Image: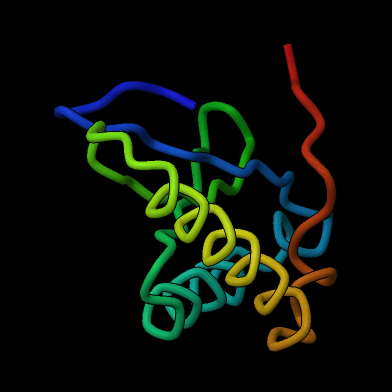
Length: 99
């Protein structure tokens, strides 16, 4: 979670696999395909952190029902991505922080 431009950014981090690092063009195509198909989330490669990040933004105006709906949609999108993209595990794995 991070405050940004009057709202909150939610992020989920993954690490690119060895396959993704060795096949950069295919990995970037995967990211572009992802961004075209998943409207609620934005996908980005953060090369400096050696990470793939999914994020989304909501306004900082809190309403319990709207926030609950947002969280449900956020989780559903991430879960849906895991099922829709069979290449997901070829390109990404749980985040491993590098030093």
